[in-house]
Length: 332
Image (tube, rainbow, N blue to C red; front, side, top):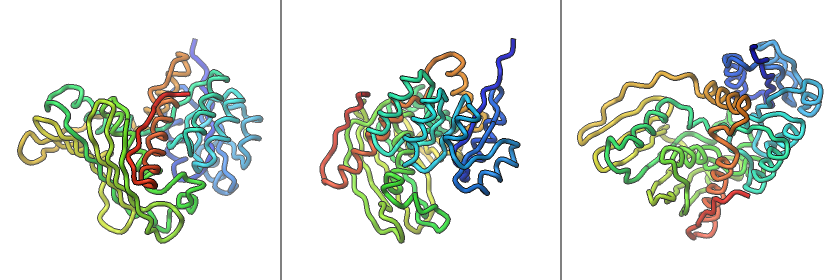
């Protein structure tokens, strides 16, 4: 007997909502049922496009529609309250990263999920991108020898006019470029190495044209297996860049996430053939669906996402105090 499709509602009708709804539409076993946004015209636009219901109140939607899964694609400061309400009504969760503003908020979501016995996947998309998967396989294979260090660089105009203002207000976003893009880098480095961050030193600057968040940051971190890594990010004007250099004893990889993977065995970098995989959002939803059907854990559970926020909190504390910070990854 064929199992009934799980009904999915998306909270938030921003740009990323389209990727969620397209992935839901493409995932066998899932069907979109509703979209929610405080701006009715935005909700209506997606509702018409995907033939689903539109709401401006997520509580009303959950009570009336009774979705099986709720995808939270809202400003960071709304993650905790919406996740807990949805969990209390028996909804499985797809939560955009970062999971929440603080470790304490992550703990509240984890507790709510356990009480409701629901599955939660936090959307750290780095785990589902073809080039990243290929790079991780090469690290694990030992083909290029022992892993020595990682250098991750990300530059873009973070203060561009099109960026919503809430991103630039620390109380709502949790921070600036490091909270938004730095968490991608922390996650990527941890996931690639199957390790966790154990200590950090960091420095940030605040020269943004608007808001009260940092516009750049430099992080030196050490992983639990002793591997050192650096993260360098600038949100000021300049040449855009998104590269991760992975250095081994017998060569190097240059990972351009979402674009390509390159390898050097002593000479110039040579481009590797790409893996052919489904889109990252489709892989995320397939992962969540499998966990729901099997009553098992997702491959990106909330406990892992909590660890990324713990590392981010240590980064900001190091920048504030000028002191190295050690991270305790134990889950509540």
